[in-house]
Length: 268
Length: 252
Image (cartoon, rainbow over all chains, first blue to last red; front, side, top):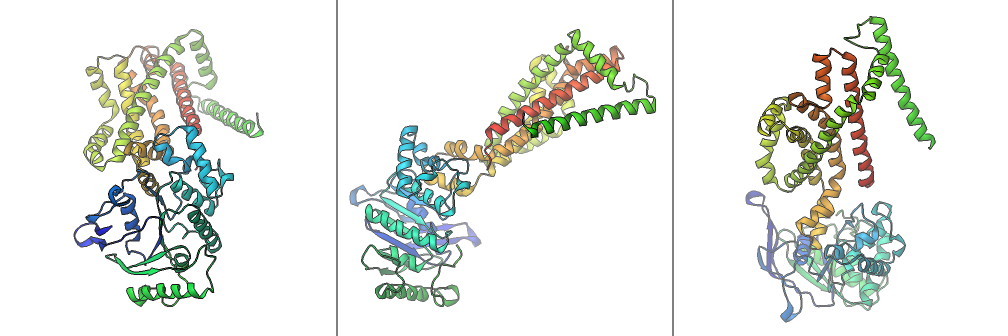
């Protein structure tokens, strides 16, 4: 992304969500984006997914010569949302296979690939259940399976764990890391949790609010696979660096990271 | 038959019996003459004779045909128009004044006009029927389409769904419960539409039978037979819609 600007509304109520944003994400890397509500994180993901187009600047996905603006449904991007967003009248298999159904794949292929995708996220037992019968964690896994079913080279995660309880969330982080180590693909994770970002990412972007732009970049040079990192001195240093960057970028009254140990209570 | 079904059936029969008894008592106590309010057994007797002679079937058949065709035509166009109204605010702004105006003009006043335009045949009557069911179904469909979850809509768009796919896979399924609310209202209205149309111009139908019984024969029991037949037809079609609804609408 280079020089990207995107605003919403007109006149008095116009809000510039992103301004002069430059961002390059290396293929196969894991990037976390952190910042307060309204810093344009979600807008950034929607631009990358092709759901929005920039007012100015360019968004390109791919390597060198093959790079092209994203187009929703072109198979290069998988997007998982904060809420799982499963269709209530479809079974888990049908929900996960929805991208294939939209593209006109045969029923046999849909079932086969959906089952593989569900196995990958560990809920193959929930195949024929409907979303109302799934726990929050299972539903979120199904949402992730749907994003992964087309094997996209770029996976975008929009606070996918913020609706889960802390323990489920840690387990989820562990699995996400396992999935990523098993098959490294480019991941961009938007999160409110510093500890989650430190545990998962190669690089943490701290964003400014309105208009949003990348204010600081913190490199996370810790060995993988990373366990739950509480108490690890190296991790604590990175953690502190991120919190300091946040405190610098945002006025204290807006920044819950300056006084609390963890930011997981921040409402979405 | 489960105990529950039995209980429901028993309750239905009991309320019907209570209704007939109250009716009979009313006739007895007020000593009303038969040409104003015939007793239930007189009506039943008249009904049996009308069925036996084949007269009733002929009229029921004509009315049912009008209802089926009129409701079918009206519901199909109403759902199509409702989807368009729901999807586009512009279309809604342009069309809705005409829809509301057409609905505000009494169908009784429109029926003679349609009769003149379309030559007094079955088609004119079907059209009256279709017109009266159109509004509630179109509005219900529009509201239902708009009620689709915007988060699911964005999810589908992120997967590259076309506007048509968003309609068939999300908007119509989530609108179904509301659409069926409109269909339930519409199907009962279609009975009214058929009778009104027959009143204006027809040679058979329950509306015609009521007219004959009233003005030609002074046969009040026969009028009651026709009214009962209309009530039963209305109930039957309503139950049919509810049955289809149970089949199609997933419990959320």
